[in-house]
Amino acid sequence: MDQAVKQEILDKRNQIPKWVILLFVALAVVGLGFFAIGTNGENKEEVWQVYLVNFIFWTGVAQGGLVFSCILRITNARWGRSLLRISEGFACFTIISFVLLIVLFIGKDVLFPYATQHYHHPKDIWLNMNFVMARNLIGLAIIVVMNYFYLKTSLSQDLDGKDKMDTLKKLAPAIIIVYAIVFSFFSWDFMMSLDPHWFSTLFGPYYFMGSLVAAIGLTIIISVALKRYLGLNEYLTDHHYWDMAKILQGLSLFWVYAMFSQFLPIWYANMPEETGFVIKRVAEEPFKSFSWAVLTCCFIFPFVALLPRTNKIFTPIVVFISAVSVAGLWMDKFMLIVPSLSEGLSFGLSHFLITLGFVSAFLATFLIFANRYPLIPYGDPFFEGKNAYGGH
Figure 1 (cartoon, one colour):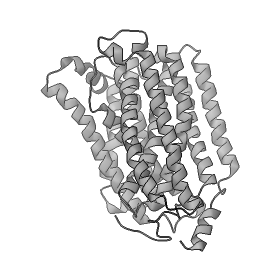
Figure 2 (spheres, helix red, strand yellow):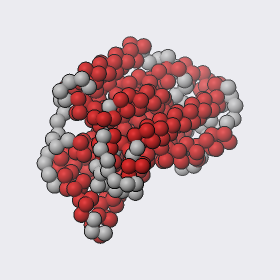
Figure 3 (cartoon, rainbow, N blue to C red):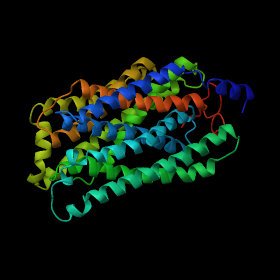
């Protein structure tokens, strides 16, 4: 590696102003304060629901970023090396997520119907509250530990100059497998089981693949912002965003396929007991219009908008499309959770501030990571320097 390039990348550290990080920390504290106040108020059910929505979404995005890095490692994708470290940085939030999961279980009697009601055997065995808490806490703890070793190994290639590709290639598949298992538990326990009559063996992949799509969209948004502020134009080129946009478009198509495939068995197997979940969301207001907004933001708009090549390489357009997609995937979690627990649709100041708190906490943890470690993995054997594009 050219020593001048190495030094230039190292000099990019500590360039993000401390006040920006402190601002996000302060906003996170404000969100936490409004959450604490709301849990003791008249609308505590709604406060806990928006907390659950944000926990599910931002934890999925955080791990989805690291999974994207693992995919790049496994496939030897030279083209995406410059984006690899940015997506890895998302995983720092999973440490916060572990604490947030403990807090989530404090509100179990308000949030989870199965905490106070009996469903039916054998569901009562699987949804035993102690079993639910144990498997999810242990699963997320395993993910946090694996993330630590993966990030430490990845960073050692830059900071210690050691070739760790063999170790990373062993860790990457393991992380993806554990991600699929643990986040399937999350989807079953924290979303699907809120409705006692809803069953879907595809719900786990629908959730964790949606989280991966959101992580890719957020990687595009944050990398463009860092590219402009830190002067990374020679490392993040139009070619990178062309391919990232194609991945976002393709996975948006997979997302809608996974969604539709869950509804097909209800129709061809004639399972009327499951239609209530669907009808409430697609045929009854106020959720009907909201569901169409989700479909538009997550699939129709990004798929159509990304058809022209120009829209894939003009970064303001790519960022806007990615932002719409990420917002739609957050709305998707809202639509999966809230109608199972509430008859109406509301979003007030406390909902906004709690959501802002989660966004700020996520960005604060990422920026702390970005300020401390090199954002371009110059020690990676497949990194080829400035203005390099290694193809696929």
